[in-house]
Amino acid sequence: METYSFKDGSSVASSPISSPNISTLLKIKVLSWSKETGLPASVHVRVCNKTFNLHKTLLCTKSGYFKEREDQLSEIEIPQDFPGGAETFEKIMLFIYGCPTLIHPFNIAGLRCAAQFLQMTEHYSTSNLCERFDLYLNQVVLQNWDDTLVVLKTCQELLPWSEDLLIVSRCIESLAFTACMEILDPERRREKPMVMLEDLMNQPWEYTTVEKIINQDTWIKDLTDLPFAFFRQVTGSLRRQGMKERYVSPLIVFYVNKCFIPEDQTNTDILQRALDLLLTRDKAYRFIPVGFYFACLARNLKHETLVKLQYQIVSLLHTAHTENFIYPKAWSGNVAFSQELLTMENLFVAYVSTESERHLTSSPSNVMRVGNLWDIYLSSLPYDQDMETKRFIELIETVPMLFRESHDQLYLAVNAFLQVHKAISQEEKGSICSYLNCQKLSEETSLELVQNEQMPLRLVVQALFVQQLNTHQAFKDCSDSFRFTNSADFSGSVVPTSRPLTSQHSPCTDDETGPRNRPLCFLMQKDATLDEYESTSFRIHNLEEQLVSLKKTLQSQSNPKKPTCLGKRSASRNRSTFGQVTTACIGSVSFTSQRKYANRLLRVLRRVNLFGSRKTNKSER
Image (cartoon, rainbow, N blue to C red; front, top):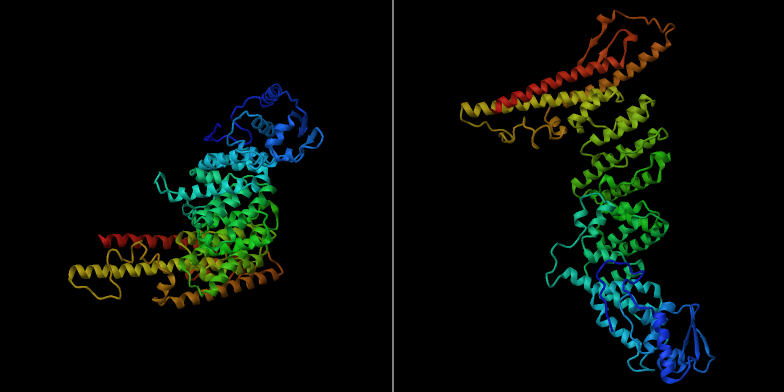
């Protein structure tokens, strides 16, 4: 009995092994048997529209199926569901006539099922075909990974016979056992580590990247190529045989990843069932990147599955990447209430609710990262004219302000919204910008804000004041550092201070301990200028009200082209600190002039700041 071990990647749809003309060979054997015994071929057997002339006596001695029909007419019709069809029946007949044919993994499953259909067991003849085929399966096929895979794939077309005869289960148990041995590697044959999902935790989920990773391990690639019905049984067998969940869960994830590439309805059904394998086990969650769950959210899944996915995303949201977020389509319209935006909003609301119940016991860095992720998402939305100010404010308030360590990304989101809604009122603009805290803006963002024409005047002046306050504090710290350095050099004594001043901890340095990276509230708590900041903000607010009132008065004049001036423009304008302008000429009130003055003041402050840094370098020398 010849054997064959499948080693290449050929498809199992057709056998790559050449075989003789079975039909011709069977006719020759039938004629030879007739000459030897002198008995004619008296039975006409019809299989799948093909007729065979055979000897009744020989059939009845080998097959229980024909034995039971021995007294019937000379014609027998084999049912259409005969496993393997006419081609397999021809090979079985060759065995009956004493001509051994080629047996290999591509046809063994069909031969075994056909032999069982014809009841070719030991009850009718010793060393019958059922026993011989089982021997080949157990001693040859199931001892080889590739042969087992081939047989298992051919069993798909032989259901339910292949399952009833336990061919499928025997192949699956063999594959699962080999996979467990591959991971344990008792003989230390592996040259590289096992493919795991930990390497994908800190990078966006990309289908093509994951596909390349899958191909690194042959056993993973082979198992993920199986039909889902067999793959599900393989995962069950792996768990029964003791494989740890940290290896089983990635296998399911890799299988689901294959369903993403061709996006059709059939794969959606497979994706749904594959996720059910994953989401029913709590231990699997911590081994799976959150980007994978986001990728699944974009598919048309059952509500129960979507709820489970969202639950897992919330628990891992601090590890997410914005590249994996789901965004509304710019061309779809109604971005404010699109399904994608509502889904993302619900995820972050759930995270905030979870953290509130925990009383913010999670890592502060995780909480701040989630707040920053939401602001990045808002800054990337394709805003349209239909989104109202009220809706945008609701999006900002989705994450509490205490979740935001920096307001740089929030500024970008506000700016993106204002760029699309340039016609909104000053009151609406002020309501939106009131969420921006100039003390939490970086220097680069603060400079951009001051030069942004869409920002309200009040916010611009606040940003300028914060810049001036930082410069004032920098000069103060530099002066303290200079006095300490000189006193140490000339007197040889150290003046006690509240904290040690070294070259590494100099307030003029730009490292992480320097004042530029310290929270502004920390500086302001130690500085008496906090009251000045509050009073200035109050004055700015009054100024805005006065400007609005003056404009209304201007509009009520009977002759708007010739405004009545209370004095000469050049003599009546008094400039106050931080760009406040008081004018006696109503017609001269202009936001443009205020912004030009603010820009000039900013350039002066930057020069002062540069001078301070140079002075610091000299003192360090």
